[in-house]
Length: 320
Image 1 (cartoon, rainbow, N blue to C red):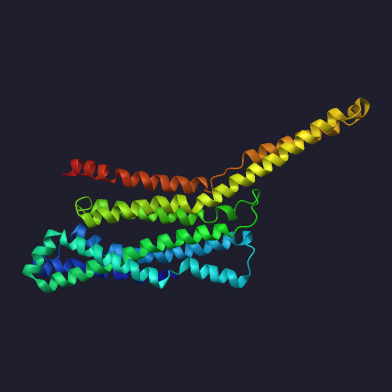
Image 2: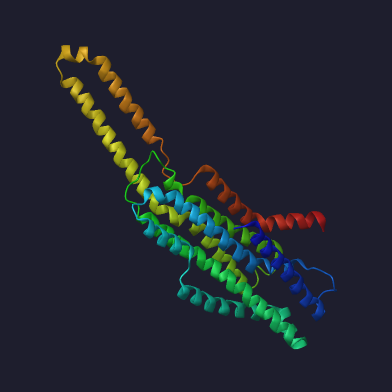
């Protein structure tokens, strides 16, 4: 996407932050001109969810393009597959929105200041309720977007007919999509832990946090399990064929006439060495469909999420 589109998203985010804080000013919750960290964080969820879906769709298109050489399909089928990978079914979105409405009702019912605001300023309370509904709805759609792409990646991997272990780039194609999806969900959790003190006390937020964490792990592991099994099976098949060839050469050497074996000894030794080298190369081929940097990035985000609470406590003890 052009840079100006991202700039528009950021401008909208800035405006929503001002508006959401202004509601608190009018309600007398905080002094006018004060930007509360928690209130400023709320608009980041819906806008961030939209930006992430756009970004991950672009990553998905690139991943599918890199996987294209391994697919025996027509250009038309490829275009249809790309559309399905980046477009969620309408029925799924509708169900997700209904579930998110139920979740926001639980959230509002467990947010004390909202209940007080309803009595003091019903109009502002209604506007805030609509804002929270908007935020939960887009976060829900983003979660569904993740589930949909998980399913599509599994489906695309199942379409693979031949695996070439000596050209592994297509086999790793979707590892970047799965890792970046997982990292985005983990960072969303970390952001919530840092900015929202009710993350582990509000029932709705606990559910959202758990769902995001589970989705993060699943998005990293599940889509690549199928391709990993295929790589393992192909590696096992190659090694079996190489071992059979190696054994056949050895038997042929010892079964030959002594004088003939002596004359062909250098050639036989060269053949055995070549087969042994090939076997070593195949044995060294990794079966995990992740590049090293991909795995390290997800692991760091995973640890950061778990350490978020500890980091907050340490920072608070140092500066408060």
